Image (cartoon, rainbow, N blue to C red):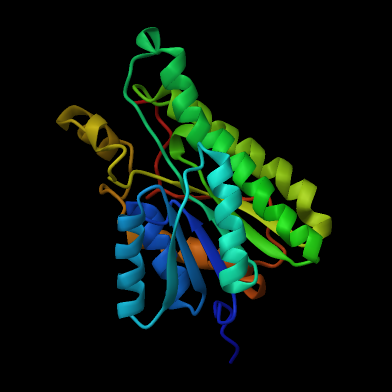
Length: 256
């Protein structure tokens, strides 16, 4: 029986692949046979993820780029082209957060978060999509959004705004790239404690999250692998584009 999730021969680019969630998703792609470029601001952390993938028998290489400095993304796109001949799967998982109250928010902080979570994602996609369109090569783009993109959460105004933009960008580009055979989808994770959101998870907030999550627990990073692999596979999801896939433990969508 054919394995619908086999990614052997595919090249995946994991932007933010050195983060807690990004690395888990990148490892999932590697476990299915994809050759994975781990791209992050911190090259040492990216190298650590590569070593873990290689220890499990996978093929990966670390690259340094910062999506808020787009010239570095243009450079890394060329480096990946030289290394692997192009890409088939683009995982956009960069992320930056802040708990600054709205009335105390500065333009500098707003611009900083937006430059990573939304602007960086948009123009990273543009850079890599151009490569494939020029080569008439199909692809799957997977953007990482958040439950805060659909129901506003307290304390994360700019982050929520940026992720709402990611949802819109995902559906717009799904339409834009469909004639080119490039599918664009997003995963909407629920509450997965990671470096960027631990600072807002005090006891009262954890209690509120659990009250609104039917499964009564946080997600584990590895639980994002299934959705990632599904959306990456042309065999499994070749007619799926513009989808916002929730992986959230049944989160009820209450403002907390």
